[in-house]
Length: 100
Image 1 (cartoon, rainbow, N blue to C red):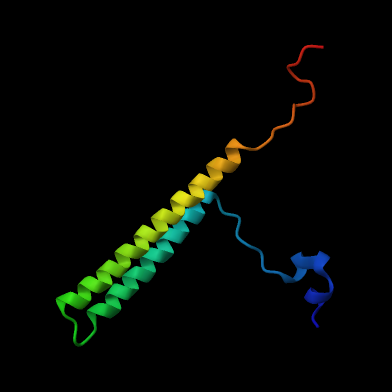
Image 2 (image 1 turned 180 degrees about the vertical axis):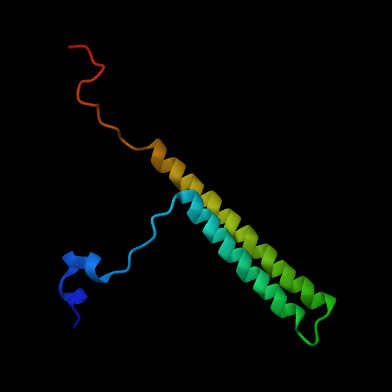
C-alpha cells in the first residue's frame, strides 16, 4: 500500500489540489465543456459519408436536448441553493446590537 492509503491525515502530500474557482467560473467551465462536446459531435456528424438531412437533424436534436438537460440541472441546483440559504440558522452574534 502507498503512503496515501496509510496516512489519511496527510492528504495534502499525495492528493491532487483542486483549483480554487468561484461558483460562476465553475458554471462557465461546465457550460464550455458541454458546448465543446456538442460541437465535436456536430463536426463528426458532418464528416459522415452517408449524412442526410434527417441524420443531421437527429444530431442537432441531441445537442438541443443536452443543452435543455443542463439548463434544467442548473435550475434544480439554483433551487437547492436558495432552499439552503433560506433555511440556514444564524445564531445571535454574541450580544452586539442587543439591549443589556
